[in-house]
Image (tube, rainbow, N blue to C red; front, side):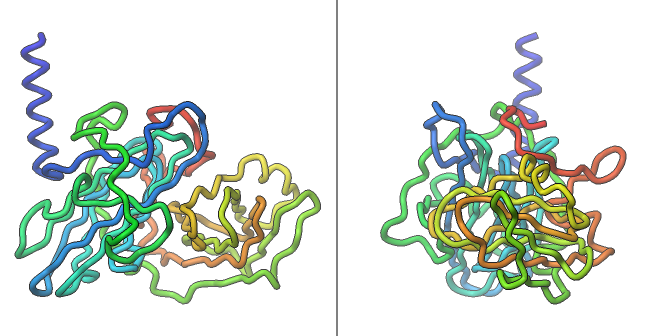
Length: 311
């Protein structure tokens, strides 16, 4: 029985290594005594001697991730109800010379993990992988690694590793910048309504399906909730609002799940500057980054849970 188990294990290690090579699960902390939301930023650079016709980015983040390629938001995802290895073609975002890949990660607890690998056509497979290729940054910035950056705080090891097992590959035909072809809808504080028990309500001119960006002042933990229409009971939304876990100095925060929104509610210590909705056209909705298909349709993200593995 043990020999059979080892054979199966080695088979899957070979299969996953075929996708992610020497990539390792990395994370921002191993201080696990107190349950609280955490966020981190991992950054790496890659120099190309010539433009590339294509590049395949493979990424899985527990519980949420946002990937920036040369400063452009390229992909995002969340890990419930399972762990997916999202596949993006990011060749159009790379150029000759130095390229910078930055990954923002978040979790409702101190535990989490990021697995990433990059294939570049004409250069090779897994030319950039999570692990020693990356540095950690304790202040938000999308520039190349430099003085002040830190070594990766925690390396959990190569896959498989509980609770992530083997992330199921899922192709994402379009990156975020390829999906957002319409003008964003921006609502500043001059349009926000303060709520009686604290917080702000932003009402959109019409219900829109897309990605929510929140712009905030100061550093700290805030919360956000959305509704398809104007809510009559803001206290209920306050109770189910998601934490806006972010890195020190980060002013723009992206909700990784696109959804239908008619109103946005921000609660917390810091006053928001604005919200912005990036619309997603109908033809891109089923396969957009952050969309998780289920047996009976798209799975809707609920409030963060501390369960491991995620619900």
